[in-house]
Image 1 (spheres, one colour):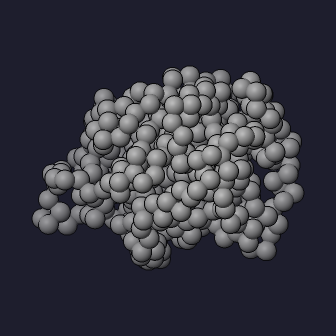
Image 2: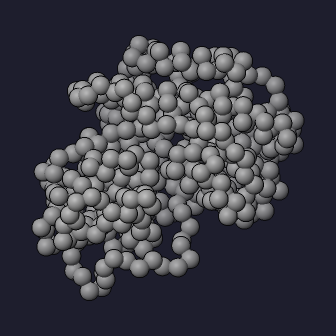
Amino acid sequence: MGDYLIAASPIPGHVRPMLHVAADLRARGHRVTVLTGAEHRAEVTSLGLTYLKLPSRAHPRCDDDGLPAPLPPLLDRWYRGRCEMRSVFIDPLPAQYRALRNALRTTMFDAVLCDVAFTGVLPLLTGHGPRPWIVVGGVGPLTLSSADTPPFGAAFTPRAQSNYELMTWVTHRLLFGDVHSGLNDALAAVGAPPSPVFLTDWPLLADRVLQFTVPALEYARSDLPATVAFTGPVLPPPVPHAARLPWNPAADPRTVVHVTQGTWDNDDLDALLRPTLDALAGRDDLLVVATTGRSDRPTLPGPVPANAYVTDFVPYAQLLPHVDVMVTNGGYGGVHQALAHGVPLVVAGGTADKPEVAARVAHTGAGINLATSRPNRSAIAAAVDTVLTTGSYRTAARRLRREIRSADAFDRIAEILEGLAVPGARSGTLVG
């Protein structure tokens, strides 16, 4: 029986897959402790897991404050990327590390499984001395640099037979050189050595990287590190009782469009939900199901078109089997759930890792990348119609569905973690 610490940055789309893994490990007989934000305490304890509080100063922020507007798309992505790297990955690092260190003082865990935004493990990786195994859960697109892919954040689809080493060097050393300096300042603040790699490459320092996807939804890399394992997506367990859908699919022949802004970047629902409702209003052939992702906002201000239904949440296990196309801002979990049901996508991602998710969806042929977080109504309508009338999108989505359904993420994750629990690991001597 293993003893595992799950360290989850309290971003909803990061916490939930990590909790699904934690619950599965507990069901297999392992001891599991979860270190995350207080807002997730009830969810953690309801699963029978031990809870440790992550202080509020260790929380990432979806921080757009001070962003000049408007900016050209590439300049906006550069400026926003710098702000997000600091607010999500760098600023929380010292407090995350101190909370992690306190947890490790009381229990010698066999392994720490953290999400990719929990950079509080970095001082353990850049320092010396005993430590448990450190395993990174890939709750977003793979961030590691490669000669075969543009640097993470560029959101460019790689071209065959191109070498991106120079582009990556310029991006890391020149365009984002101050980000690397900021990371090293945060490490120095807790007495840790500087990072030998750029911020987006920090998972290279971990003992294992468990990427929660299938290979087909990532770019091919000839230099993929041996420490990276594709587990398949971590999907939520079935809900015990089927939810009642807002319409009767058996009696309603309309094509169903689902639109969502997920659970993280959903403060301004005028970015995607409202434009989609307006773009498809008056279409008697369509039913639009919109979810706000917020229990405090189960509807939208203003009139809702007659062919639309707005609510805070509908379980995807009930909804997605009836959806013909999903319009989304590119949340990693939601995209995987759509593809697990063979649903093609229209993606409008502009913050965090969402442009990278959108680029990958387009690369697979399973959807259209609108390349903005605030598409206009005509662009949305045209993309939805294109996906619905062009069979290749659904064919690609169904191909991904087969690959996703052939993977068992929980078995693979448990297999890897259990394989690490060997003599010597607890004393800090890492094997393998």
